[in-house]
Image 1 (tube, rainbow, N blue to C red):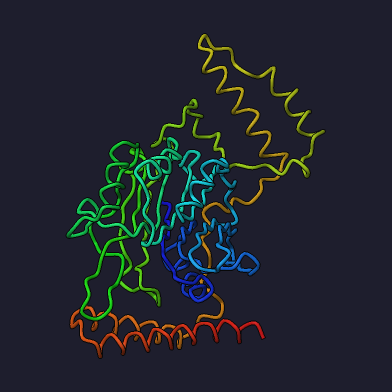
Image 2 (image 1 turned 45 degrees about the vertical axis):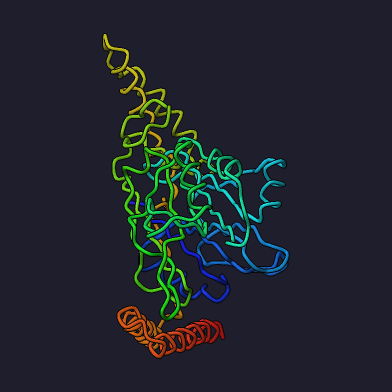
Length: 362
């Protein structure tokens, strides 16, 4: 199972403690972030993750993708004409290709943010969605409303996005739950979209975390069931089970003289079959068995999830629990006072988490 955290954080520095807690609690190895609110000159990192950012010069908006350090990643280059188109339409976008998730072929992940004060034509949305390849997730805060993803009404932007999706190879993962929390006496809305290509759609489940954790957007967990390594086609022949692509030998510490000796002594003992496939499997089994005897195997960290933050204590848990309780009270009542109680608790919890993290490094 691969778990992905998608979240409009409305200030990544302010939500870093919550992100550390969430990725540990939900065993997430990939984080898709919008509204980072980072200046290009500001440093920011998430422990156990490699962070890739697309910042705005004014320090608002912005998107990022974080991948666990055990994953092989590369930044997807966006061609200059599309870059200019994004700039003209005030759209933030970043994409990563990840190649070594267990059971998941080469997969692209995109994070997008578009504020609601810009008018974007159909052609731009269509061009964005055409960036996706065979295995892709495309997520972000689109600030658009349409019944197809849970809104009660549709806006012009929502209609354009819906039309562009119908002309693309993407499916909507959202289950209709609201992702944005309105203030007192306003309506919660669904403006954060999670999209995937059809083959990933059937393997994925989508759910919200019913606590905004200080943001006004609810975190989203996308879970991809890849327990069967052959569940997704990747245009390559299926290797035998014993040839796991995640089995990595430390060639620098190999005993090559012994390896050569065992190979030379084992070849004459091989059986001869009429079936070439059996000959091939027998030969590869022999090489693998000898390799295991003569070459150390590197530790496989692909299933290592980020640990719980070392600075997390009982005070942090109590503050988060109280904030969540006040949030649920506000959702039930919708009153101004309950909203203020929740916002005050949310601000106090953010300060406490930051302080706990700071003191832990002293």
